[in-house]
Image 1: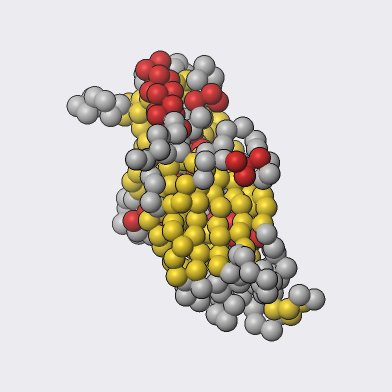
Image 2: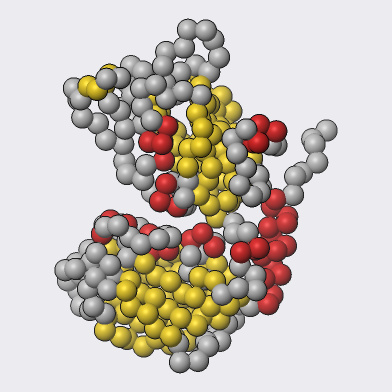
Length: 342
């Protein structure tokens, strides 16, 4: 992954994205747009509606108009780029598509979103069959919660990826104990030693990993070293409890781990040992309460010895007072509707 595709997919189903409505899904279900896996295809698998596709496919339009799908993002955030993938759709792909986005607080219905302030982030653009099309977003300075994918006039699209930076609503963080390592709260893995089998950002996903592919797993080391990942926390804070989960990793869990903290606001300060090297068990949810609250940290490094996989990392704690103020100010700035252009 390079460029904006290295950023989280804010719309993917595993992060809570949902296709809430579509104009038509006669041949293939709209929900397939957000499947986390790469589009698959098995030839000559015909059902009552024709060849089965791992994507969204509409009927042939005869009376004009175009088809659309409405997507609620799993994580609100700044959209940096969009991928419209027509994989396996070779004779039935739409010749053009566009993407709009809006911010709608709360839990609006599709009907209520009709009056939202929709912004075009990908103008009507030509598509080719069996191709992943990457488009930079035209508006990156606002937070959005929903996108609308339109295809002209009809056809099939396998996947929609909406890459960007998650921006958490401070209403659900301030004054509360929060997971400072959660992707949905704005945390990210900014560096790692190895991501041969899967992305380290997977450790920060919500819920329980259903299989090994939904965590972070490294290649087998043969050099005597060990693997690590550096996580930028959602905001500066104090960590009170750490959870290291090796669920599903029965023969490839690390033998041990260590956790260190850093305060990036004080670059010359040495790292803090939050948890010294500690043994891990396979297929186990490990929880460690820190002996005393740590000093404020802005990032942590998870070291695993020597290699292997981690399903989930949770770091429960409290936001620093200035971090709460910064989150509120950022949210207000990014959700404010800009004045109309002259």
